[in-house]
Amino acid sequence: MERRRTDVAEWPLQTQLEMIRDAGFDGAGVRFIDPAFATEATGFLRAHDMIWQAQCYPTSVDALKPVLELVAKLGADHVNLQPDVRPRRLEHCIPLLEGWRRLGEQSGIAVHVETHRDRMTTDLFFMLQLLDCFPDLRLTADISHYLVGREFAWPVDEENHRLMHRVLDNAWGIHGRIASREQVQISLGFPQHQGWVELFMGWWEYAIRSWRKRAGPDAILTFLCELGPPPYAITGPDGRELSDRWEDALALKAMIKALWARIEAEENKTVSSRA
Image (tube, rainbow, N blue to C red; front, side, top):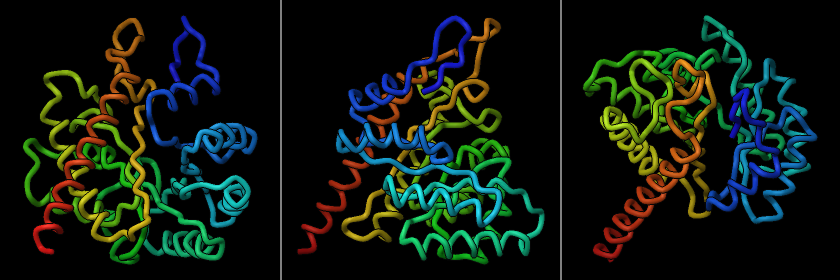
């Protein structure tokens, strides 16, 4: 929701929240590293019967504790944890993941580890090794980082699909942006980007179907339309973005809701045919 332009002011938080509500989103991601911000944002969301995920960036096991304490006070569907550490060896990651998982279990709060560049989870191959160590690790899958990070050749081959599917089989939440093999965020409306749009919609369909097989009847799968401001968003020589991120977010929301409805209808039809 940030604009980061010198010629216009940022939207106030209240305006941003009203835009999210009025556009028909079910909730929002909220930074829980700032208690005052989190209190204001969640107060609005709660008042309008919306949900939120608590976003945090711990650099140690203990750094998660105040976030969980704030979640215990304000609530959240889950904690979205970006591990803000960069170990080069698996054995240095294991105590951190074990500690964060232990704190989540003790507090009764779901903790999802996000796949993200410049974090513990920066690299696809390293992430797969972490999953070898923790086969039940709950992830928030932001797979845009892995496409651009590995610079997959086009068309994406079956082996790379298989590797991405393994990550998606551990996804309990999704952060949605569309990347190409060279840019981490591209507009989904440009004609030249439609191959990448179809690629991501296919991966997200796989993730949703996988989650529906694993999740309980009352579980919630969150899909956060996470279209970042510059430098995520590509700009022209005047510094302005080449596309309208808000309109892209609305279009992405509509596409995901339609995808979910189609999957749900197909699965209900299958169940009915077997009855």
